[in-house]
Image (cartoon, rainbow, N blue to C red; front, side):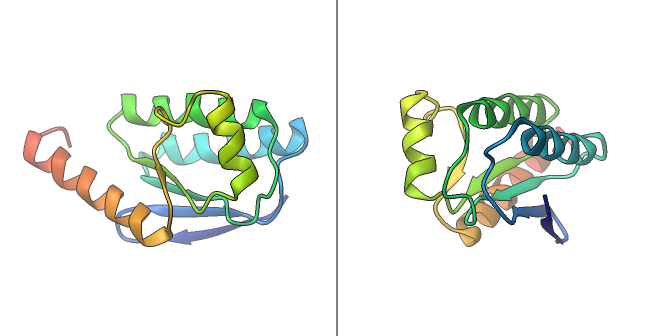
Length: 123
């Protein structure tokens, strides 16, 4: 699987180029995301190209997000396709996952969380 990786000052955006319909793709993605966690890099995951994902992938996203936030690192998902949003809703993770409708709103969330961490002295 290929990923478009866009590094910005405050975060990195990962945009997969296809759906997550196999365990291999999920494992490859997880390895990539964990590598950024080890470098304490804020992430935005853009799923605009994923019209379908397995439930396992959504559960992995939720677990990865929890790992990021446990270390005070931002993890935001954006540009979900309707079928992907439906799976998130079915798994009752819509209140758990940090989802933004657009890239710009995802960037804003990361910047706001950075400001919050600076103000609370968590950096």
